[in-house]
Image (cartoon, rainbow, N blue to C red; front, side):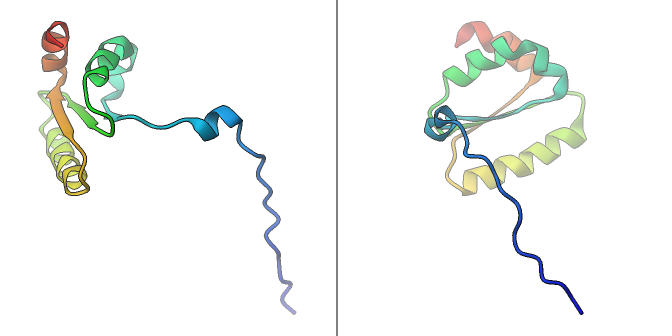
Length: 96
């Protein structure tokens, strides 16, 4: 005989602060840029709400091609997309 299992997973209620949180922007960056979160945050603060920021290494063409497809998908869903290389982020941060 086959024993039937009920859904025994019980999840705790999330904190109130998390329930009220709203995600503003999406950022997809290489792991090598994670120590520079302040620089990335400056760029993100100047994007409209709901925008997507994509950053890629200039020399990595495979990564760039993949992010171009991701960019196209987000644009089809109605998001504003900003794509920059890591070098452009460093050069243009003072211009924002």
